[in-house]
Image (cartoon, helix red, strand yellow):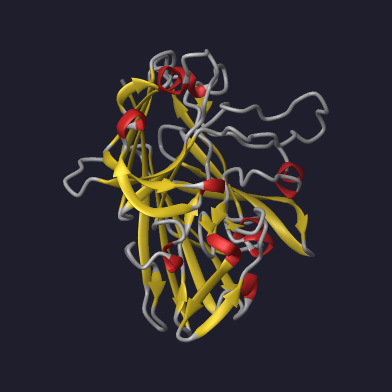
Length: 339
């Protein structure tokens, strides 16, 4: 076994012990994960000069995550993204969810998994985060058990595998909310090039709520262009993207991100039908013990592989209903390389 997993005490939250885990491969590249929110804290991979650097936004201490409002690196559940009117209907019952985004729910509100303390198992080269979510948590039906498995190999591939079971019919949609910046924070991500294997997106109206229409990606399709070039308007302002891309069925990858300055690349693969691309427009979380340092808009970007947003209120979308006693089984794969 070439990957080693170590842990150290990292504080407490909700009266529970929090740890920082390190998964390190034989070349020295490593990933750090905490059981607070089953959160990715850092991903340290080499640049073209073989120098290791962290390619996601993260905080040096637990305090940063306890105060974070931007879901930095965290596991999102029970349902990623927006749910209109913070409400779902299932089996003849209406469930009121936590409205934390105006009248809508985003990333499951106050009951979200991003602020839960997970249990953990170390199985060989796998780190497994485990969580029991009670019936009614965040308004969702069903006692739900989730296992998030992280595996980091010598090929600098991070595989994240989600498995869950509920004792009632429910809706489930888990993802990771890492903000990527392949330059190790030296630059914004606006100079990165991006390719997304998608020709269509979910149209949205006010507050990013889906209208039900599927439309061409058109001017926000990405086929290797610079992100900044795509975001800059004619007036010179930067207009961010907050859109769900429907992945092509014949894709070789979901997305590929390239940073020429460092030489690093990220290739994303997934079992999910789509990916939410967010350019970090609203990044504003503060770094602990540094009053002058705040995460800045466009400092990092999210490639959130997941089911369709608001699918429970859009029967025309593929369903994300998880039938009772059936196994939710999806994966996200992040492969880091060089140009």
